[in-house]
Image 1 (cartoon, one colour):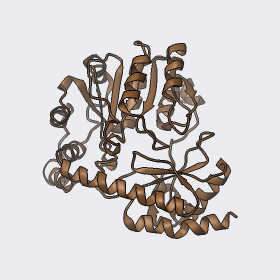
Image 2 (cartoon, rainbow, N blue to C red):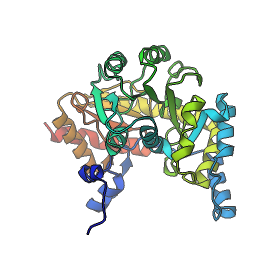
Image 3 (cartoon, rainbow, N blue to C red):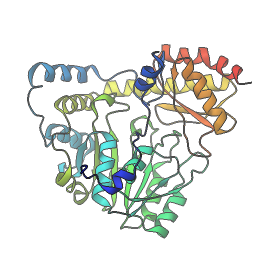
Image 4 (cartoon, rainbow, N blue to C red):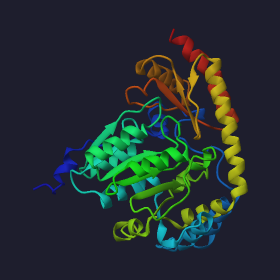
Length: 367
């Protein structure tokens, strides 16, 4: 007899939320000239983080990492002004999302998000056999009013919102996020994904308040800090929300290099400030390229610019495919209403120059 596989797992398609650029390179036999699709920090990470990784590699890589992530948590607490029982480390926000769905909801529970928002969250919702409900974006923003209204009506176990947003790059000021939080029922857990918080303008992130019993805020070292390859993020919240993670998390899941590099990067705020400034300049450059080619950039608070291609989703997909064929890796939103756009990450100057050089030819070929 075959080995038993959970019935729900059998019903799911084998998939990943994002097709990696490496897969495309393998299938085409061609390397990309510009990697502008994965919202990575192409500038790299702090030299201090690199030194920390080198130290681990030469001295303690043969040892198990601290399963309590104590030193990194202590550094975060000092940086953020919170207590040790208000933060948990995870393998990036993606890993934390899976744990959150598992901990704070049960089979068939309703979980609420925006149609077209971060697809990895939906991936975990499906994997744990929860019921996904969505509301559409409004004016390229996650619709906080509609989300709050749906939460009041549906009483979901979890509601997810990101600020700044992926895939559109838009954001709400802190006062609007705070008003949204106040409108959500107290028995609904709010996931506030702040992956791009470091690149957002002042006044975007609400002040930290770990006394709220239904709010988890997620942050990462993958974006502005430039350590995506090591997979390290963290959740901030009330101690009663943080403590259940210790019941099911992979205690050795954050490797020694990730812990050391993240702590070193966190302490190098001068390097972070320089990176954020460079990122802002790159956003301006990408926006200028879009305008020069008759396209419309959407004002962004992230490390990417979403560009309205001016027609429908099919046309935007043609633009994306044309760039990919010319070895420029970008991605696009897929939800109706958002799919008229492509999304281009900030990158190094030579990568942006490659985009600028080939985009006119792509658009000309589609006339």
